[in-house]
Image (tube, rainbow, N blue to C red):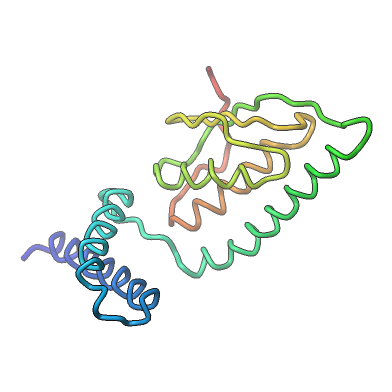
Length: 172
């Protein structure tokens, strides 16, 4: 058996164990649920392998756990920021679209970034393309590019990806 085949089998086995463990915890180890669990675990493993790509990228659990407090804080800040803007009689908004060139190459990481941007104060992902993201923001005077860039780097770290240090210009 080649080293590549061994690595792939190891990756499949680890994912199967991971999804079986999740099922055991969620079902409180009720073995009567396994007729439903087995296809679910197999499909989940297959999907995770497809989303992970040929390199078998797997999220770093510790980094993901460190990201969760930031995600929660961003959610709270987003809700508060929008509430303050809406309740302010002068309605301080300058809405617009921001084009952000992506440095991420992994599709799963791009989708996570687009979804997390929605949790930033006054922003929502409007369109995700291969090389850029279009974001609608309530206030174009905010440093949206810098905020997204910081978030993109955190997501790259979660997915164990390298991204370039310089930001490229977007060419529509």
